[in-house]
Every structure is written in structure tokens, then in C-alpha cells.
Length: 446
Image 1 (tube, rainbow, N blue to C red):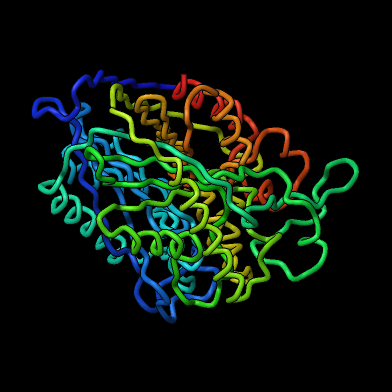
Image 2 (cartoon, helix red, strand yellow; image 1 turned 120 degrees about the vertical axis):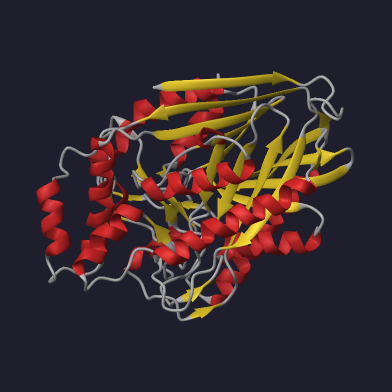
């Protein structure tokens, strides 16, 4: 692992020399009609219920600029994620290792993997992973949004944190087990009334955490973190930012002068399935509960002067599953008798294998301000990693954003691999990813 640590003591952050400033930005990333959703294996775009956005901040005055961005997409993988970081870094005048890009992970939204797109495009009969013109247009919009935002940067003098419990949203997907612990069936994002709704919530993190930045007493940006798959229903071709985006937009309407950003935490084994039957009424209820959680988290915000700030990164390259075979994956992609998901997903798997062969690591990062840590993790980490991060630094307020570089797909904890289930079956890495990721978190947080 390779770690960088850039620390700055900030005694007078509001002074003209060395003071912190922040520029916030947002831009539209809504796909066009007909574009693939969720990697091409659900219905493509037929309508736009509400637009998708990329929202972020640029922190200036703590060394080279720091960029943190949340995108209303399902996932950004491998070369595509590097392209996003490069584009935003270029616009902000910084380096890609000081850029964190995360997806909110709605499913009626695009997936982006450029290598997988090349693989499926060669087939001629498969839906695209992502349209390249649209992808590049989103990067151009991001560059312009940051360029427009930088001249409007304002002083940042204070920071605050808070948390509020979210009622009846998150539940563990891996709750239905036999006596030996082996998974019998997954609890999905939505379920009809029955056993999956009657079983307990299981292991979750019930807290929605908020970190807010201030210019004096004026709240400039408010970052919200909560761990659940952010879907109520999907697959109908109607683009939506779903419960997380709708709650964020509702809060944004409350405070148009403050930029609200929502990050999805470690939700690989977390969804709303205990409380969601997939109806429009359930979407409205789940959105309201998330919104109420945001309000609850902001009730205890007490701004304090910024005294210390640092940015750390760790590069890791976890090994692929030993069961993944290049020849077998190519055969699956080429087999026109396979359903789309059994051809497009192997393209994503093959992309991860090729990335590993090229030794291109994942970059994890953390922003530390006073006693607050914003931790940036890759892919679909299980909730145990988020809870583990909080245990690693119990004296700090740790807010976790997952769904960064989604190259590895699901990241179960080591002990869950023998128990099977969907998430384990489509994890691209061996169980060794657990100690690697845990060590990286320790280096970032300690």
C-alpha cells in the first residue's frame, strides 16, 4: 500500500493568506431517452421523472485543492472513475489523488465502465453500458461547473457535525439464514408482505450523519451520509434520483443558499426491503423518513472554528477472485443465448481482471478537519466496514462515503464468503480484500 499525508495547521483560517475557501458546484448528468440503465440489463430510459445531478465542493487553502463529489449514477468503474477524477482535478487545478468521486447508487440511472463498454460494443447485439458521447459530455459539464464555481468561492471558518436516527428505512439484505448461517434467500430492495418483511432489521447503521461547513454563522455546504441501497423501485425506464435524491432535493429547497450533498455509505448488504413493497406510496414514505433523518442530524449542529485539516490517501490493489477466468468470461460475453445480465456483467468482471493485470490501484482517501473524518471507500462495501471504521477511530466523528471506484463491485467481509448469497456470488475479489481494506482504513484514520 502507498499512503500520502498532507497536513496543515490552520490557526486563522479566515485570513486572506492561508485561509480556507470553498466553491460548491452542481451539474446535470441525466441520461437521454433510450440510454441504458444499470449496466444495460434493465429497461432503458423512456422518461425522466426527476433529473440526475452531480454535486460537489472544492476546498481551497489546504495545500492543493480538494474535490469531493457525489453523482446520481449507479456506479463509475475503473478507467471511467479515473477519467472523472482527472477531469474534476484539471478543472480545480489539483491532482487526481485529491479528488473523491462517489455514486449515490440509484438503479434507474447509468453505470459507467469504459472497458466494459468497448467489450459489449464489439458484440453488436448488446445494449451499451454507457454512451461515450453522453459520458464525455458529463465530464465537460463538470469542468465547466467547477470553472464557474471557483470565482465564487467563499471563506470557510467553521465546521459542525451531527447525527439523527432514521426510522424504518435501512434493513439487512442477508437476514434469512439456516442454522449454519448459510444464506437461504436475499431480502431485496422491495418485497411483498411476508417473511422478508417480518424478519428483523438485522445489522445496520441507523444514524444519518451530517457534516456542515460555515462562513462565520452562514452554512455554505451540508454533507449527509447514510447507509442503504437508495432504491424504492426501479426497472421501469423512468429516470429518478429516488428516495435519497428526492430527500436531498427537498432539503435543498428548504435552504437554497446552502449546497446539500448526499453520500451513500457502506450498503452492499443494506436496503429498504423490510419497509418497502415497491409501491409509489412506499417511495413517498421512505423519502420523508430520509428527509426527517437529515433534519434530525442537523438539529445538533454546533459550528466550531477550523483548527486542523489534513488529506490522506492510500492506494490498494485487491486480488481478483481466483475463480474468474478470462477465457470463461469471454465465452459468456460471446454467448448470444445468455441473457444480457450474463453478458454485460462478465464484461465488467473482465474489465477488473484487465485492470489488475495493469496494476492500476484503487485510491482511498480521508479528509480530517478537527475531530471530524470524511472517509472515502470504493464500491459496494458491506455495512461492517462502516461500523469498523467508526471503531478504528472512536474519538472521531467518522462519516463514510462508499461507492467510489466501483471496479471490485461488491466487497463482502471475509467471514461472509462461506455463507453464499447474491452479493458473494458477484464479488469480483477474493476474501483477501477484507484485511487489505481494513488496513487501509486504519492507515487513513489513525
